[in-house]
Image: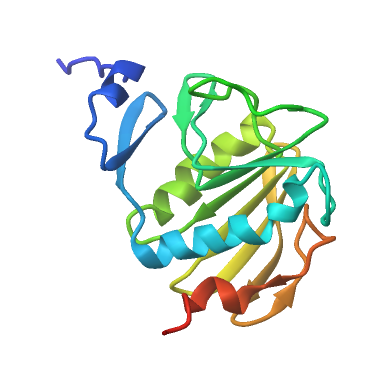
Length: 189
């Protein structure tokens, strides 16, 4: 006779050490190390390049709230994407809460050897089921940007950009993104 599997709770996440990222996916706790510098740099550059979409005044298209590593409570799952964005029409202000229950309009996951499989196989279907409209997978090791749009309950891969291209990617087609900057790291001094 097998034991019934215990469903993880938020208290399980609270007990994790501060140097890891904890998520609850399908009732199980998943723990990831903090991003390696190369992956943190790529994520920082993505967020920086999208800063114009978050402006209320000044240059840039505005209309979005972009957050780095927000904690999302989507049903019973607790997910922490690398970057997520909400159209201001759906989320007019940054909430003053520890977690957000409203699914983002766009999510970006920066892939690494420790999380790539989980991001693709476990988290992507959950984002689609929650109603996230767009998803980017950024892989600094392969130097690729995969751009997805949700079609019904599934993801449609629109394009894979690679290397040092200048690109426009849904849902931020008004911005030209220089992928070279995402992979190279800061210039040596």
